[in-house]
Image (tube, rainbow, N blue to C red; front, side, top):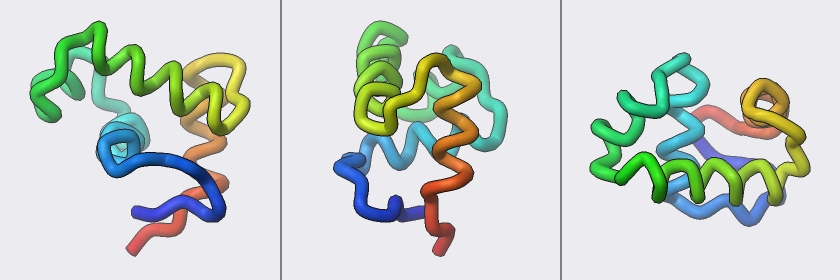
Length: 69
């Protein structure tokens, strides 16, 4: 998965992949070996970078802007 013209880092791309599959925050934290606090920081960063107002908007923006490989 890649993003068109975005400053999304690799860790955030991995998180985006799980968000698209409707994993819960707890499941994503376990899969990525992140604490929920650190995971939430990455999600907040993605929201800021993609200008998403909430998690639902973030997922829609990820769908729109990602290029699956």
